[in-house]
Image 1 (cartoon, rainbow, N blue to C red):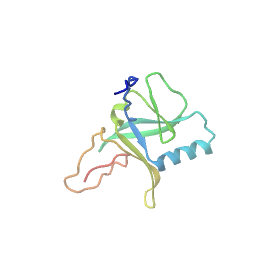
Image 2: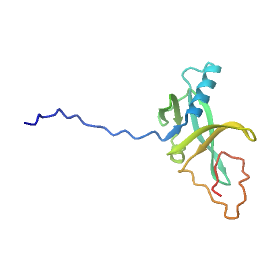
Image 3: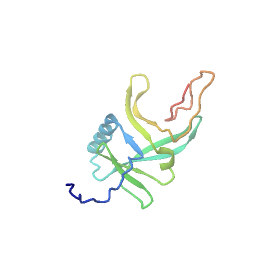
Image 4: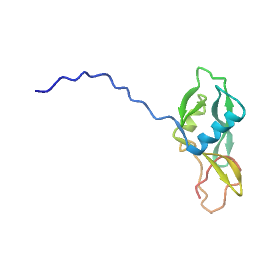
Length: 133
């Protein structure tokens, strides 16, 4: 005989719009701790366009608005404004320490359309985009 199961409504949760790598998360946590910024979050935003499409900016912020999207990734609170979220859906943020270019955050976003260099030339915009060559 089958027992009747008590079923509850299952709510699907969508994955966060943006994911931080372990290295990016550690870098943000270290900066917050060094500066004693309890209650602050990593704000990611569109900072203009470049030759590759969209450039992103980041700041530590504790001023959240009702229209912001707020979530946690790898233990870091992330905040994105209502305009930037469309460019950041599915984005991955990493922290890289390149001996030539230095250390910094890299944003890879499938929602921010870039361009391909058919002639093999490198991108010279210097922005936070990644061109497909």
